[in-house]
Length: 126
Image 1 (cartoon, one colour):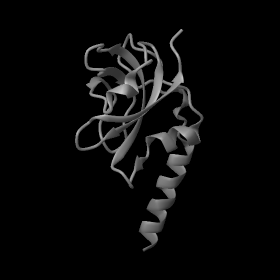
Image 2: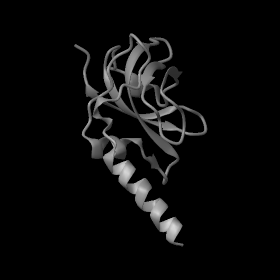
Image 3: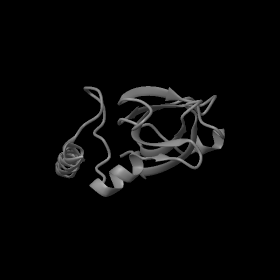
Image 4: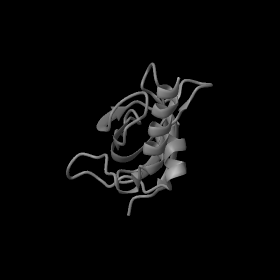
């Protein structure tokens, strides 16, 4: 029991000392990740247990005009996938209207289908 308490204390202290503001989760030549306050970053990364959505943050690198699909260079989506650039289908398609390459977005992706179910532009492209 004492070992378990000690282990939990060490893990909690380590987690509290992490500073994610300077982390770049994108491939070389990619866009810098959205600079969110630590508490907001952790909140965005948590899975929404009520509807099976995982929260992600990334930069749109391409928009398919025919399907509305988005290619996103994203941070780690905790509990779902590591950081990478990936094509995501958007459902409903209308969610991708007005989204442009270079936009930093926060999005909800369904864990079973990898379809984006909600999008919020947090920093428009320049």
